[in-house]
Image (cartoon, rainbow, N blue to C red; front, top):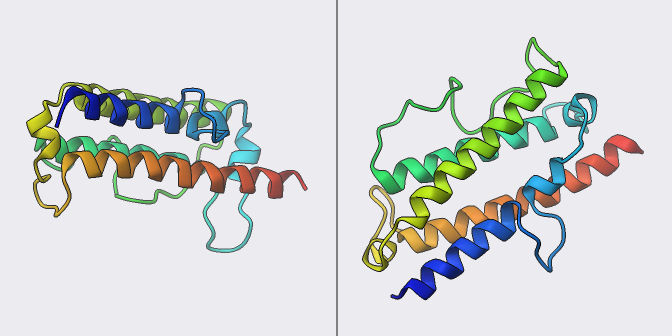
Length: 160
């Protein structure tokens, strides 16, 4: 596996998160300019809102980075895993911005780890998984796009 594979993986991660791409809105673009009210809109009981999806995506970026580095669990800034109820007691614009910043930070940290992988490391299976680092990184890009699509639909529902 060459550096070309790493270049393609990084390009996929970038386009799924915040770089211009032919497919349309990426994850970061889907939340740009949202108010806490729209982010907190819940389409029905026990359904996730945009805010929860943002923190969910941040968590999985953290989890993938942790798996790639072998870092122990427990360093995510919020208690819990996978989905985090949002908004909590604080539904302010500042709280929303903090959670979007968390998404940006976890993305930057994941991308930095990915950028440093050698061709051999990309090929290797991720500890505790049956998938290679390459497959895992492509998966997190797909995860971003999946949730970007959900967010686009939730925004339309919230505004209708």
